Length: 406
Image (cartoon, rainbow, N blue to C red; front, side, top):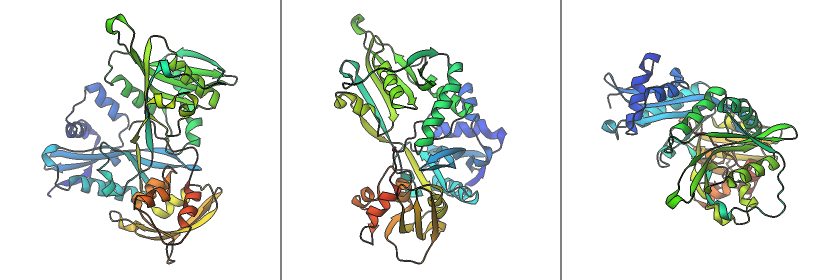
């Protein structure tokens, strides 16, 4: 493979972006290119060049992500693609290797991404760390269980007036839930622009705030796809984001969208797997809930990553970690941790558990247990009781969630 891998300069961005979009058989309008430019970090944007032509890419933007008991600044991997004319030549592997080596050199313990196809990134050491819940509920069968009482008020606001409240509520929510990124106005605007380009063009994006005794404590962002067959309203309300800092506001927001007039169905994607709505409705089967893979985590520095999070229970476990793609990780580590902190160092001790970096990434945010991974044939228990001990340590509540597209 005679292809050069390097980072790009600012003047190359439009060509770079066009190459990425072509990998997805797509192209962007000028205003959409500017949206992508708003997040680019040129020293993290790798291009594969065949002569003067950009034929592949991978990039990342840097944001804090919540981990159990804390947060870590991580690269969110994006802009990944190889042009159809250059597939199956090892270009993606070279790009991912360069990217992960840079992450390691920068001292960042983790990298994260969402996958266009789940089969792509396992060979580079990524593990599936969070799932997203999708629902499609007929509003006629969306009654809540007895005991629900509304508590608060709703008001529509403009996009501009929603920003400060959305950021404030999101920050409260994300501090408690692993997998969520810290947002700023630029990142929020990027995510909201996605809504404008969804298939239901022409529909307005609506912003509703919930106010409790102490002020705004929740929000919902949604669009409505109008449908009036035979002059009968069968419109679909699509929830784009719904967050609340307390259970009462959360229930009120869901009841609000389920009771909007002229709506036949309410749909939502990328919700947390422990979505309380499953408990609130009298007929949870009517939610038609399905799971999809969401955030994939790549442990780039085993010892540092394990030191950065907290653990639900005090414990000690020796992990043998296999890493074929990043050889600096390959080895055995002793982890001692609990709610107040953790220590992790290489060791010559015999391992309690044997796993890969894929498995460690899957378990890192608390979304998958080591016993689940062991039952799938991925983790080996060498010391009796080690699986239970590791799960008691790594398990976390609430479940990890990554609701924003990147």
